[in-house]
Image (tube, rainbow, N blue to C red):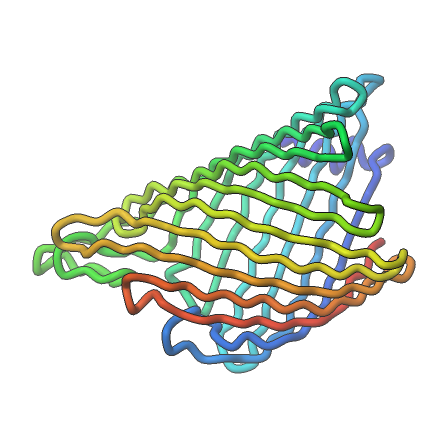
Amino acid sequence: MILVLLLSVGAQAADWETVAELAVGFDDNVAQSPTGKGSGFSMYGLDTAAHLPMGANRLLLSGFLYGRYQQYWAAEDNYLVGAGTELAVPLIDGILTPELAVDGRLVRDGEQPDEDRDEYGVEGRLRWFAGGRLTVLLLQSWTRQFYDETECEGPGCSRGMIGGGRFGFRRLDRQDDLWITEMALSFPFTPSWVAGLSATYSRNSSTIMIESFEAHGLSLGITWMPSAVWELTAGSGLWTADYDHDRYIGARTDRLLTADAGISWIHRSWELFFNVHWEYNDSSWESETYHNTVTGCGVLWHF
């Protein structure tokens, strides 16, 4: 309802921002499985947001819509669409800014249909512009996820298996509650160099026991802007996840290592980019161990 009011009543006064994206690339393991196949892809995205200042107290109400469609050339397509609203309240001349966001989305994946889901969530953030150019972000979010696929639980089940109600296992509708707590630091060493560090803790509680986990991780990133039109980024992260288990299901621990690099060239409302993402998931379950490298290039149009 807040989003509808913002997009209608506030349409005249709101500051609108829209970004269209077109990209092509190659994903060498679309399903993120031990024997997954690779495919080229094209990706189409559109984000639009309206920002509406509210009174002399500088409250800022925003509404946003977004969508992504990824078309694979040798695999099934996927897409997501979402919408939400956000309220920011600058305090102490902007030194502290609490933010509250609510959104919902649909996720559909033809290559991994067990990941099809509808979800909604709430996210609270606190931005603190500390002394010495340091910026601190504290984040707490909760997401309720409703999965389309029915899975099984009990002896004889493996991850993602569809239950039949016989041989000691039963069918269950999957519903997850994902909680994420994060602290992120950002520090510009110089006007052209910015470093970032974040620590994350997450807990997923699922009606399917083997989908429940506790995870924690660290990530580090650096950005170099040698001029007004060039931006280069690099980063890496390490996460460990421990999954719930019982006497029928063996213990599972995953360690995920990621690395990213990218370069962008910006000219007025246009941005050209190239990026690479690599990840390796080392799991105590052989069926969950995989490598994945995704490269992509494209163009962004801000209007």
